Image (cartoon, rainbow over all chains, first blue to last red; front, top):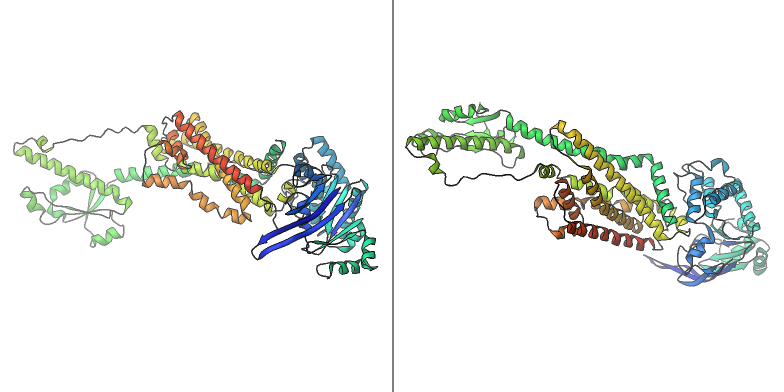
Length: 248
Length: 389
């Protein structure tokens, strides 16, 4: 369960202050998939970074299972499985060693790491490259390794930043099934995307973000009703106010 | 604590898998430095012995004016040669090291028992001509003294009366302190190895990890940033110390082989242990400083551009001491790099290091290391650290 409350975050750049996030708030429930949808540069990644305690908000608050990301960041990180925007794997380690490294950093026992690795390798269909060094992995193999690494400690809450970015059709389909499986296991799943169809196909709740603000929040049906558009794509365009950066 | 050990193990495994970097950073120093020091020593001793012992070729202008002097020189390992047409040009062209010029007035002055003037022509800015000039000068002085003494004797005066004071030199240099002289570059090589030996790993572990975008997921784990950073620093320290140990062992081994080259050098096991202890603070200072730099720079390239400046730091005290030699004083053991330089020289020269000097040295060395560690930790907590794109 993740509660986001009126987040603000701005960055100082040479050309002035950029308000990346100004007033984002939503709730993501256990056993549901929540999608953050928005054009490039809308503030999705910054919002997620504050969620997994990499950055602190200027104002507003986030609670993960009731723990504050600012004052109880250790507890929050223990309860989160994170696939960040940056998903570099250690290319001189094997996929299995990459996963085990993160398991140990979570303080897991070796036999639990081995069992978790076997479980995730099966679910993500990565058995055939599990013991290869990550040098020369395809984008899909890297993403799978990064996801397995993020979920090795069996977290209740899962955050994925554009998980299907750069993946081929078959891998994307496999990943979608995996997300539905996580949902069926009763986890709270948040993922961000700029691909409308993906969000529409997977999400129980959609949070549309543009220019650092929440433009709409609800189930796909809610958003159709809100905008009076039967077609989801038209509904998004209407909500965001432009077609810029939104891929069909 | 678990996270710390996990990070150390992973960084070492990661480096070890990168075979080329691993062997280059560990074996380059141990293989190159002894060859450098022994090679230079051999070269220097070769040059001195050949210049001291081989016949001195001496072009003489006006040899006919002083036949007995010429005879004297010819009997003392000097090959007299006719004067070249353009003596100044020959010296400038470095074809000739030194020329003796005997003016016409020599014979007349000699007969009148006046000091007969001769001239040594040379270029004092040429280092390699120094020994031939000195040899000629010594021969001429000997000749002058001998002849002068004979003249006094023939007049019934004791030649001793001409000499009011006699100066003798008593050289108190020990064989060990001579070794120190031969190893003037050893401190620099060791300090540089300790200071920057783990640099590849340190920069890669922070700036490189960010550039490869694996730092962000790492910082999203529950492991504390301080522990992750400390793990990386300790892994680099371990590699740095291991490299130093290999370097010292290679010095010890090559010194054992050195007598066959005509150079007497030695390093006992106790000295090796002491040198290693002296270099621990510098390893810590180097890795912490580089971590702080890497955590604050945007890319590996930016972090690496500090390297050329950092390489200058350890050579500063060596240069300053060369230009302005100083006696050992307690404050020197508190100044980074200078302190290491003094300690290493003292150990190599088998001089006694007092407990106070050890205390000041270790306290200041580890103190500076700790301060840099804290600065690096502060920079690691900057929220911009993980963001690469």
